Length: 184
Image: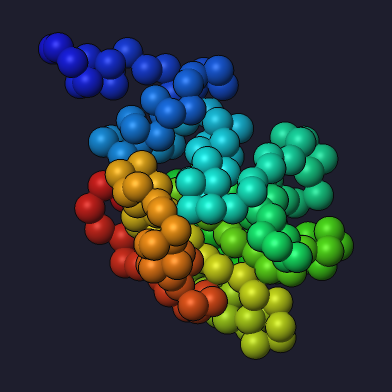
């Protein structure tokens, strides 16, 4: 095959040094292959998506990261992100672990991004932390895919930045959980 399709086949998703822009474009086209992406590279993908949405993003150390993989900075707040490139559903314990890491690291809120989905207990845990003043957003496979598509295909300007922010992040509603359908 010629063109972009040929390039998609040649990309080694397990390579930590694969060009980030190419990995992002590949995932927009073939998101079902997300489990093949090197876990560290997937953290970079997550950081790049949020960077595209206007955050200053930093990837933490791969090991001994204190439970936080990516830190987003926005004015006087910091958001800790836990990234799990998993096939299995996320359990409540993993949300509790993120909440503890947020508190220990002094972050004002958190986001849990997974390539799979959340069990009912994990969703409940996320809601419970929000009600206790620890905002945690849950991004399942579809929600993150939607954010990736927006980051890769939409030109974000001053005029549309706020609308895009609310489309991706929402108004702080951690209860936004998408049904898994499509290439997820």
